[in-house]
Image (cartoon, rainbow, N blue to C red; front, side):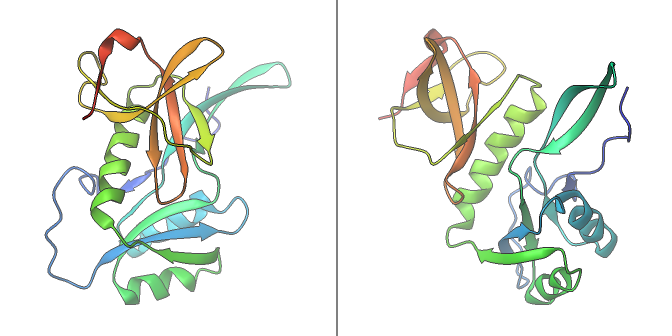
Length: 185
């Protein structure tokens, strides 16, 4: 039983689904938050109606003999903001942000975030991967992950598909059968 209900991790809901051809001054920023402030800043951004994405995953733990379900950030300390300069400044005024990184290639970031969101919504067990090294690039041909692109990893004898956020040099991997994969030329 969850302690709290799941909070919105994406605002607006279609932020990553639609192709954003916004003629405003909005751009992608990566917020690096103070310790354990990811959900609090996302609540603040939701209140300000500033578009954001906080990748959350379900975590089950045992506390005092009871099973407790919570939703924790996939990447500790990071929230993705899509806003104008004024909205960026407004987010800084919450005093929950350590620093803000500007995104040089927003197309690549949105592509990576879409793939990551698809992995998270599949509810497959994910493993956080840091300091990525290049491997064989592949595309999933069949199954629930069809169309995802990533890197093949081998961990403890199992084949894993790594979907990465190149900007952060982090990602998440999921176990997958190698016959579902095809190399990307």
